[in-house]
Length: 209
Length: 202
Ligand SMILES: [Zn+2]
Image 1 (spheres, each protein chain N blue to C red):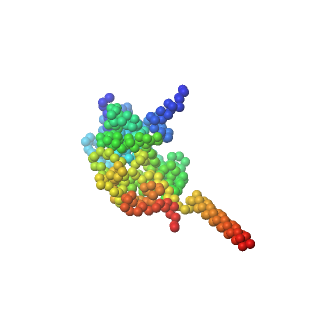
Image 2 (cartoon, rainbow over the protein chains, first blue to last red; image 1 turned 180 degrees about the vertical axis):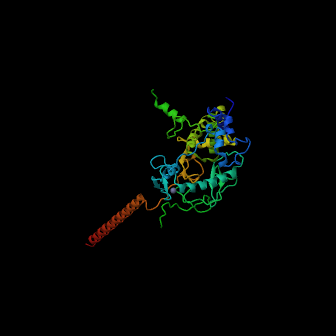
Image 3 (cartoon, protein in one colour; image 1 turned 45 degrees about the vertical axis):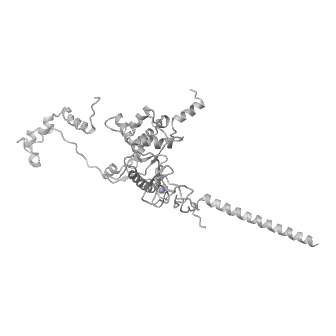
């Protein structure tokens, strides 16, 4: 069995096929004999009405009692059991249970679960990362990457002749730089890196002068 | 067993610091091919991570992949060492990533004392397929020093923070005291001058 690998699907099919022979009480032929009408052996099943099939003659002639009967629910399930099977119980395993341990995000003010990321911030960040990833794909193509990236958003202008800035490859993203993604903490977000335009002074506290 | 301090320091250089609990037994990552399929799956994720630098995986898978992404052979031996190149060829399925490994990641992580990756847990997802339920947790695995925005954005500072209010109050008090002291000095000086003038007159 060293070089022989059976896939999961194929294995289950074989196993279910073999199980028909493994049962001691019913043979393989008997199972299929029961499907046909006893008078004419090759007649298909849907042609036979239920009343015509399950009369006393058929019961005597064919050995239906010895055959397999498929599993069916014997008793009616109550409403409580049905719902607890679907949704889960409050005392045992809860498939859907109201979340009680919640905190408010200090950045945006949305509620989030303990130990996980804030859903609002997460969606915002992942949207920007996706756009940067798309820019990456367009920039590199099939060539190997040999330099680090410097992200330049739409409102920023980086001076470069060969597409490099301080030894880093410039990624141009067709979006505006989001206000919460600052370049440095001491620098305000709208400042451009080029030397021509004046850099605005940092004012992190939003103090009105 | 006695271990000298210096040997511990040397061992520190070989093994990166991952300050997280590591499972005793490895996860087999359910697949028909067994242990070989497990490594194949991991190599797929590692090459994805090295290509995109931030990737979203299942929680268990991310924890398993993290250990393989933190291999240190490339930094330790360089690109002239044959066994490291074999490992790199096995775990990075795209051949262009080997160039990226030695040109970008090795100089970036050369002087790191910490681990090279971060893991965050994504918020829970819900579906109404079949019946309303939660989906299993997912995690975000990323290499440090990436060009993306940080996963946990920093708070925007405001004047209403308690330490900002206290600092502002302290500054005001200091200014008031300074002004009062200056005023007092001026008054003293003027009074002295007046006395001097009186004496001169006499
Ligand atoms: Zn938030």
